[in-house]
Length: 242
Image (cartoon, rainbow, N blue to C red; front, side, top):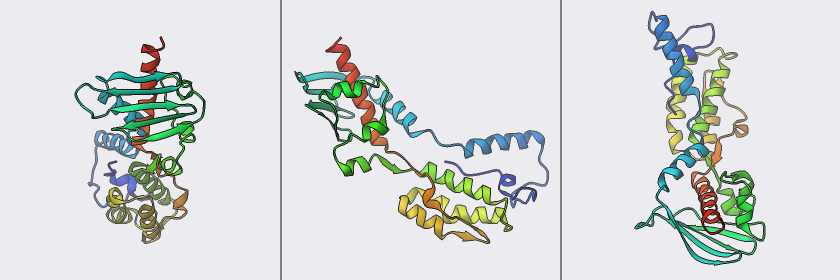
């Protein structure tokens, strides 16, 4: 996420204080900069949307190979001919489904026929509900990960809110916040992020209750696995069970 905000937005409301502001600014330029600011303040592409787009692009040439098919005992492979990249298998047995291969591996348990369980949502994925059915606790915890874009958004929104009641110089505080925290977020995990924002303080500006911020999102590899399951089952039902 870009954080090169319009200086007059950073200055405390009513002060017009901005270290980089020009003496004059045309209405056209001000409108353009406000549009840029709104774009910078918005979230990056949602994790689910990005995963869906990447999965569709990477699997457009995939084919299905049924290796075993005996009731709920199935072993089905999906791959682009000639390469193992982005290939995966779906293996089912009573009450279980396992996805494995070049994608992240997960095992789910719920209904006798897990193809029926996942097909309930059609071609859509249901990452929240499906995660509850993962058999391994560590794998279930791994379905979420630290989100840099959400972390940046949380920091910026909280900082901008502070301008209304903190007397310190907002523009100077913003530059320090960028240097000390935001520019380093790419190297943080959740723990390091909270440590950094809780430690930061500049002339009255500081953060509290940061552990209430939502800075996690679905893990990309988990979302890809969800799409692979939904896509694979839909293909199987279309070809094998028309």
